Length: 89
Image: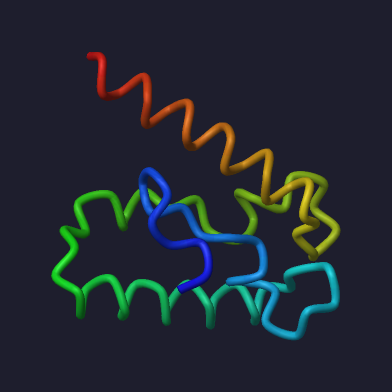
């Protein structure tokens, strides 16, 4: 699927931008996140970090009620860096 297969199974912006309008609103985020968790659980993925997800407001860094592609990318970069650092602890 889209966004699958990369290190850490990081989703693509388009996986969450369900109406393809260039921003992710909270309803889209919640729906896509729930679907993603269900798919991963169905595939037998360990969900050890699922409770650590930041949620919509943790990614909407400017608090405008929408996640831009830039905010999404910045969150992913920070998350990737954190996961990389945790592997070396």
